[in-house]
Amino acid sequence: MQFFAPASIEGGSASSVVSSCVLPRRRSTWTFLFSRCSSSPNNTFFALVSALSCEGSVDRPSEPTSCFDFSPASRVFTRRRPSVLVSRFLLPCKLIPFFLDTSTPAQKMAHTASSFFRRLLQPAGASRLFSAPVVGRHPVSLLKSSSVYAQKSASRLFSAGVRTFSSAAAGPREEAYHAGLIHTQFTTDMNISNETPVIPIFRILDYDGQIADGWQCPMTNDEVLEAYQFMVKLSIWDNMFYSVQRQGRISFYIQNQGEEALQTAVGLALDKKDHLFCQYRELGVLMLHGFTAEDALEQLFARRGDESKGRQMPISYSKHSVNLHTICTPLTTQVPHAAGAGYAFKLAGDDRIAVAFFGEGAASEGDFHAAMNFAATLKSQTLFVCRNNGYAISTPVKDQYAGDGIAIRGISYGMHTIRVDGNDLFASLLATKKAREIIVSQRQPVLIEFMTYRVGHHSTSDDSFQYRPSGELEAWGQSGIHPIARVRRYLDNLNLWSDKQDEELRKDARATMLRMMKVVEKDKRSAVIGGIFDDVYDKEPWNLREQRESLKAFMEKNKQHYPQLKEYESL
Image (cartoon, rainbow, N blue to C red):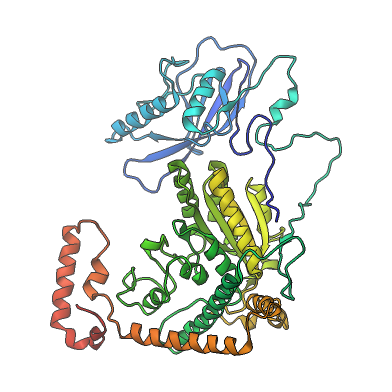
């Protein structure tokens, strides 16, 4: 089992080096690019220091100017000033508020913002290099130029210090290229390449149910039996939920067929204090994390036992007590949340992690790349779990990306990464346990790409037979390839399971779920009025209170026209 990880940069890590240097005394130009923030009544703009260029002679200007040149067409200010600090991260990552309409109350806000910026960047006792320039009537201070100051300032803004450079003749000139790279090597061969390192698929249980040489089963026989029984029940219940939707008893459902092994393995490997940020195809993980089958039914049938009071789309599970954050069906919204939560756990020194689940299709969203970069740079305690199951709704992987899967992206972002056979229960368990150990002990994120196959349709709104190639489903369903069948072969090799036991297990699973469904369907739904107005504000404002009372009066007067109200616990 090999986790791919980036090597260390000379003098720092790949994500922590902040490059800085002091340019010679020459005439320089600061460029501030502006973009309007919606239609603010205060005509508010945010300026991002985006580019620096040096021009003119090396002669030091006699006196620094204190004004900007402004181009109304491009909304660009330029400021000429001597000897400036170049920082790849220190300045470009800071948003500086400017308020251009001096006839509004925004004057005080602008002064406060610029004062805050000065206090944030300027150490105690540091004198400004020149008098503050003015935008409108509001002063804005730029940075004092010195490498010592850069080190002090950067340490206040970032977890890593600034890398200093020497201009002495004795130092190698190539050192200027090191920042931001893991390896610095020059060549005279011009090679435009698309080659990537080979990322193998980690597997220890083969199609015949045999453990690979050099490995042993990471579970006891009893644990394997329990895991197998859970996988079978999960598959049966999953199909029953799908059938219930087809009968019109619930409005929507997304299946988990074909991914039982990775879901079971991840669920067993995680700690109960870890936080789950799921996509929608992780029911097995949830059930092993404290989310019960009754919880799932209450949510699917929108009954009062649902923590969201039946207001969410089916499969948008949520349960605060087991650290399950509410599932949001738009793709990838949960991934940045997990990156942020993992960073919070790191800052708090907690030994828990955030786990983000997503598919290879969701990895094409911009939120994925932002979350990965933040997590890798800030060293979030986040486990990124990619289920590469071949399809994003109806889009096959060949139309989704041209690179080597998703794992290569983790390496590119500077993250420990492993690719695993998601149909191998044992390999998935080992990899997830090891990934969690790395995250907690080293305080940095890990990406796991599970290679598996979506046997079912994307959802009840989908017909996968319209786009699956002929024979593909049969190939993945072969005994030894399908995750449940592979574990069954392992049990058969050890004479730990029989066909009779399997038949009884499946019969009992169906009967148990039918009983639970009958009970849950008899439950009332949450109150109508409360379901609309509750949980919006901590303290309900007067206008919502008026609307609540108005709707209640209307419903009480006309409830004879709403026979479905009998399904709710109250009006």
